[in-house]
Image (cartoon, rainbow, N blue to C red; front, side):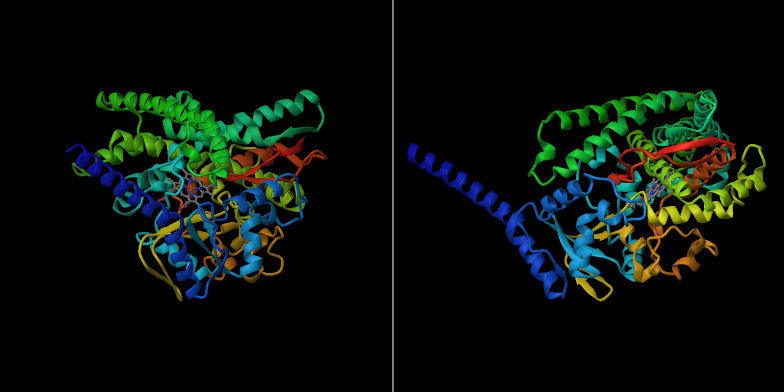
Length: 512
Ligand code: HEM
């Protein structure tokens, strides 16, 4: 009897161990090798598979090496920002595959294929290869299929141009506060002086999103921004260590802090949203900020079709991250480019003076700023805040002349496409806003070769918001100052989720 119990236990244990061994072998070896030979049969060129870590280690060391020193302003930033993809592009050509751990990732440079990926949102989905990313931004940007469609429909009204227009006074207030602080620094010294404009820009865009998202509760919302900044830095460190198997699940100091910061953000948001829901019940809540419009739109949905309070919290968290990071990055590189290209700075100021004089910028005027729009597009081309985007496919799919197996990822390398000489000409690396004088479709000859806000049904919902905010901030800056690069400025774009200036942006501000 005892012997038969032992035999049963040993048999079950053996079956379990064999099952797990098979699963691990399949994950680490058989599936990647099967996908690799599938891709090679398609004629695709790429790196050979290294078990478990794929190309993460090489990518990591090349990135660390590249960011160890600044570059010249005239250098192509791609080799500093994305050294590994650039090397692969030069080695394997315009469609190639590399390995994100055990997952093959196909990079495509062809605008027709990029368009197809962006348009077929149900087939090319968001990847979920980095679970910690949801701590910082989940919500609309991370969902797929019907859940994405439902959330997009409910959130859309918050970003209608008419609604954004009513937020212009909040843009003005936040931007003039920071510009006023710079003004005081320069006035106190009574001479042109050096300012690192990056921290000011970061707090300006955080203030804008706090005011426009939460109206009168904006001070409570500001804590979220600091916690998200901390999360982004910690996540960047984790991301680069992702080649250590299971690293992100270990109870390290950083991983624990990330989870704690995320919990703190939830507590603040829950407080703001519950307060607003109570005010709505009492008929006292404002409905002109993003949260108000979102709750209004949500309450108009059919029963069972609305978002839960948890869902609303995720979306607010996303507004903070998506709205603040991207616009601050756009503004800082615009100031750097205008410092380097004084002729364009003078043209932009002339236009601002012509449209507004010394008066407060208004929506109508902001929409007339043609030169500024050209400049912002050119900065978004050369310094796209999101340098690449990824999509995943879960079943066999056609993509142009390729047939791709389920289980691979597609990488859309925004920065490399935006600076591609085949698509933009031999001067692709030069700052020439005149490319956009007749609009985006003329500049791109109707191709999907410019997509700083993505493309198709999932195009950035906040693009008008971000562009109007940037125009407001720049108008106020150009009305008050002229600026140039300080001798201490070091050009060092690097990725902290978006494209940050590694050593800040030290400019010399002259009061006008
Ligand atoms: C210069 C400013 C901005 C840039 C360059 C930018 C860029 C992008 C890009 C590239 C995506 C697509 C990401 C992907 O699909 O992988 C995106 C999506 C999104 N952005 Fe923006 N963004 C900007 C401003 C904003 C602002 C101000 C907000 C909100 C306040 C915002 C909210 C969102 C949201 C919610 C999505 C998800 C849309 C969806 O999946 O349906 N963005 N943005």
